[in-house]
Length: 212
Image (cartoon, rainbow, N blue to C red; front, top):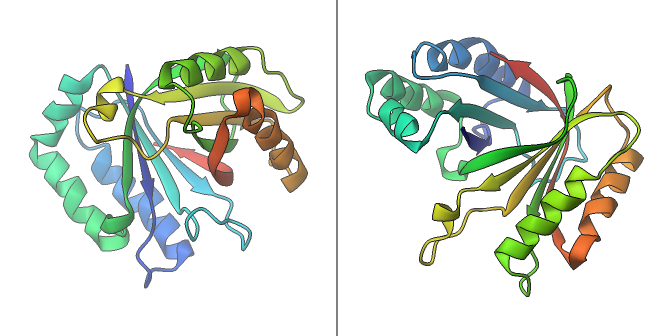
């Protein structure tokens, strides 16, 4: 399975409330209309003035496919064109970031409504394979109060061909038993920013998940 992770921001003239409502209630219906779309998950940030993900991140969409061929099959359909046309209504297309990743579940447990998501880039002097190996090993032995489930999403190696590279080298997702405070977030960031001297590149606050 592969996970198409899309990082999105709303158009400037759309309020966050209207963005969230439209995305959850209108756009999700269009996305799930296609029989080629399997599991589709929206992550809505708990919006506050402290979110500083490149001037805030307004949402994360995830769609799982059997393989890249299945994803290409969707891209060739009229349903996908409808999805793209509808995105122009409320999404800032210039700010969209797409990562095609493979998910590794490192802590088994139930999915919950609140998640902490951390975006990571390796430090420049680390080999990508070493970074990925060490990160998965650290995440596989990670335990913390209030943590229900955890996964590491690693971009497909094909995304590093030539001069190309994904926006992040890893995305960590922590499912929590309830919304956590900033101290909890800081503690988790500290736990992972210190391993092998790798660098936390981006941080999104806890998010509420809407599954469609």
